[in-house]
Image (cartoon, rainbow, N blue to C red):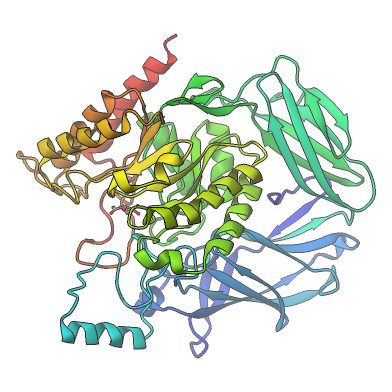
Length: 583
Ligand code: BDP
């Protein structure tokens, strides 16, 4: 799906602003900012705890000047599902909280008219949503005390009270979290564009259009000079002496593909780069690439998970400060603006579906596979042209070792589907939980192996010497598997400002000591092609006995102040970057 674009042929009208909001049917209308999560916009605890349908309302007018155009509404993300009404009449629905959808206005509303737009938003999570909610009140981190009659009765009561808890470790932010826009294009228009670049300068293209005519595709270099040109719906363009998109500061060269179709025009930036796994190496442009950068969340004060371009730019500049070169979109596809920024800044992304919370044994009995495939399809369709996206992650930390065969039957078709759907055929991974790795079939079968490990934190807690020894024991096991390995999560909760000359858990000193100990294990192995500390910044979670005001594993605080570990990684990664840039 194309990102909305205003140009000589197309108009975009941003409907962001202050809308009316009803938390529940019987609440009064109150002001709410769009886009943003609604949860932190009011001190009323119900805004954080409510599970159910909420209502958003606004009025908008289509400028009369847009007469004769194709008109549609585009929602970049409504979490977790949406029902859209125009003047009280349903015009569309969408399931899934992190991917865009469009609703055509033809026959429903004309240029020059004003209408009331209502969006019903459902934030409930369950065994049939992605991410997963617990059915029954078992929190991700909570003490269950199974078997105690009074506690069991209490859990049943929570269920009756409609308490809906996440099966994942981030706050279940919801609402209209990304922009809503009116988009206008000519009636005959460009629906989609697919680009597959090659290092020799060939760029395969496919254009989907609505209406009669032949498209033309031109490639412009970064100075706007014409570099190639072809007519037709499909074909191959040839760029002479191509400049490559490299994941290094200052070198992510971008071209623009300009498609013209009748009166319509669309411009898509893209990079010429190639991604491939060879043996135990991950190659970008045929050179070994080492992933080093913390995983992220879309999370900040006030906005929750709402799009905030200022925060995105700040974060990417902090990535530069850290000499980080990548992140994983843990644990859902991010706002499209972030990918455009990373294309431009040369930061590599591993793009993840919202399949998180699938740790319960029973989940292979849940009926999710079809929906999961649909989400994967929508994510790849949205992000396929971004040079910054170098791999797909099917999901995070499912149960894969209790029923290894069932896990295979669930995940392997998705692995194959991702390869079939992606025109650039990027490597595919599934992020493995710390588990009985010898039993696992599916994680080692991925193109690149991503493993989350918490040696020294959740297990062997605080004993870094034994933690490192145990991790080495595991790495010995991986050594002959012939796969590139990324330590895709590792970390320690750290309260900024808490210090100890003896590095004990939760102190800033411990966080540094922990990373030193684990990194020493990584540095010994040439099949390890990446390290992704958990997490870039402290982030909000649902309350629980293991979470003091959220997850504190950030290298930065939630307001982006570096802890000691941020300085440690900054030095480490600066040295790596310097070594990579030395021929
Ligand atoms: C991992 C999860 C991540 C959590 C992290 C933690 O993938 O979402 O936030 O652990 O516990 O299991 O900090």
